[in-house]
Image (cartoon, rainbow, N blue to C red; front, side, top):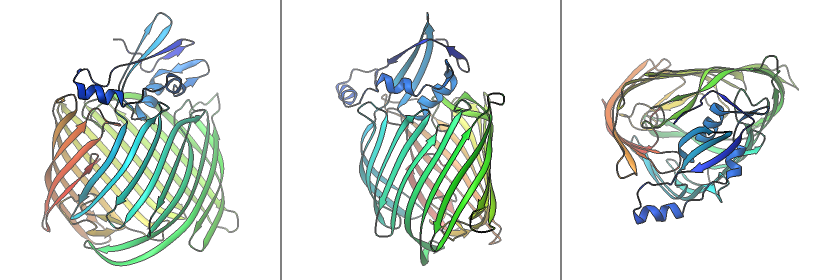
Length: 454
């Protein structure tokens, strides 16, 4: 099978071919196949990224993979026809959730369909008995609402939290030449203040956010996107009306890699440099500020690196630097390292802290054990992967060390442990189930849920 990654396919016919969900003819697998919507060909073709009359195949494959609906994507050319062969995943789910960490648990129930009527329309309805309080939420996502732009909605309701939001965002690619960003959020939330895992206080915050940004690239400088925008933010009793100007530099391209999100399946990631700078000016005052984001990713045969830096000093004031590195020793052994530094002066809800322990880092501590606004966190893992069983899942084992130094507390924390991983190889987005046993001087705790630690 010949692949054409990073090539342009010019003025060609496209044929979509689907593989079965399961290769086995076992009758239960056949029932699952019948319960799965087959994606509509026109919707799949709508997702293909184009540059004038050419299909940018590498970006198109990443776009298709990011839907989470396909486990395998192959392509080859036959005469003047580009054939894209896809293996859809099972997208209908009666959602049951049970997860926790550091002594806290949450559970939920809901109904999910990630490919409603074959239109790649993702809709989720859930009721969650959360770590702090129960809540109901409704979420939807429709890719390619219009030219290379997606639309999403979110509604959450509970006694202590209410949120309504609508977003239209571009699919970020060097070939998305015109980009429109639109976001509206209306929220109320009651937050709790913790110390060593126990609630010591609470406070309320409410607000509204509206943002519109438009950017366009120049043909002579394809990766350069100047932008202009307007925003409105209401935080409790403070109103901010602001204008923004900025630019993006997108020197990325799609690269095939493995062992970052999944257990060895081909992943399509953005390699290279992405830079975004915005300058803000409050219309009704002298307040101004800056926001900057830098991403640099590098993927090689036996080494992957993902690096992000974010700085804000308008309304929010924070600095975050995160570097994830993956060393592939064998096809079943990966050494993974996360190094994260964060400093917060002020966040939107008038707080300036994060929590470490149980649910985030430091898996050997009680949830919400440490409250900090200036810290460095390191997570080191040895990840062992095994072959697929019964065409349903892949098992894995993890050994980890979590440690952090909190500058504002002058405190060092250390924990270690081991965990079990199971990747569901026929379910939407190839979810990874996680069960960790963490140990520290404060005792031992179990963390469980979905997704790798990073």
